[in-house]
Length: 88
Image 1 (cartoon, rainbow, N blue to C red):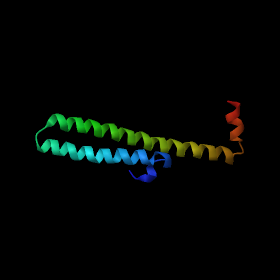
Image 2: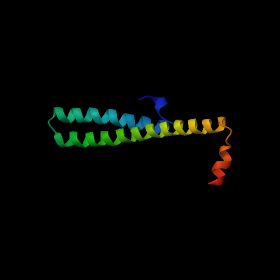
Image 3: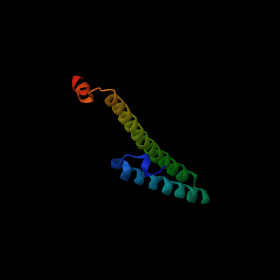
Image 4: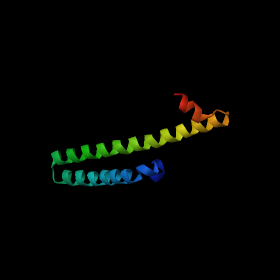
């Protein structure tokens, strides 16, 4: 994942969750070295949580790109998108 995978408004959140993923992996590894499986498992749960947020933010960007493409196609066909929205 890179910064172009996210909407500009979501970039700060994505960075924080990316950092959390990295930190959680490091802490889980440290816990494994000291044979503390409970802590390692908790850090991996935190990792999964942040990773899921990253996937959600990435999907949000993909949906926005898809929506913009649909709108552009409608406009190219001469459809007044604003009227369609107002009719709903």
